[in-house]
Amino acid sequence: MTAAPTTNVPPNRGSAAARTRIQNIVLTTVTYLIAIAFLFPLVWMMMAAFKTEAQAFAAPPVFAFTPILDNFQRALPSYFPALLNSLTAAVGSTILAFLLGLPAAFALAVYPTKRAQNTLTWMLSTKMMPAVGVIVPLFLLYKNLGLLDTRTGLILMYTTMNLPLVVWMMHSYMTEIPYAIYEAAKIDGATVSQEFFRIALPLSMPGVSATALLCLIFAWNEVFFALNLTTSDAAPLSVYIGSFKTSMGLFWAQLSAAATLTVLPVLIFGWVAQRQLVRGLSLGAVK
Image (cartoon, rainbow, N blue to C red; front, side, top):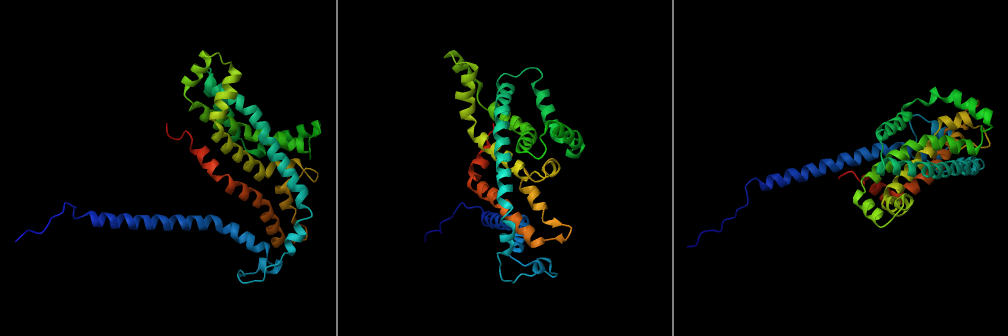
């Protein structure tokens, strides 16, 4: 008689695999629940955009209804001028912030001085100041310079708002570039400008994409300064949404339609650029 073949499989391997499967199922379920919790307000807003005002205010909420487009028809006439203002301010401020921030980030990363870290800390500290604490001097300054309710004023405001973000993020990306590359370029006779345009900038393009997307989103969503520094001519979409709250009441369905039109461009652009955003944000996370 021959003995039955034996295996070297540990007896607890099956239970360990079962525990791993259970953990994966639990983590997946929790992830989906968190995603639903974050997306529910957005879905609810889009649903309200297709309801009547009575249905939007109904309690308990109305889930079964016939969709209508009347709210979008009322919201569209004032939408496109505000959209143009938002696009101009967001894109213009992002370009200007990069024109000012990229050279600063390069200098602080590649040619740092003794006070480089203090400079970075000071720039970051400007983001911690409450906006309400500076709105009065800003309003008076804009009034004296004739920048109230102008696209130029919004571009300058959003540039100062996003400039520390550009400097800090691009500084971290450029710091990750091996300094040996710059030394090799110097041996070949490269100037500082050539190091910036031919080495630092091309190798930091994933970071540029991620930072640019964040700047666009922050400028697109900014409300406080837009409400206080614009009225009608340069009012962006954030101010346009607030116009649906009038002395006659809050037109919730129309406001939802306007908000849906406002968030769609950012959602579409973020969905298209999500790979560049993830790659840029994770670049340099592990040395």
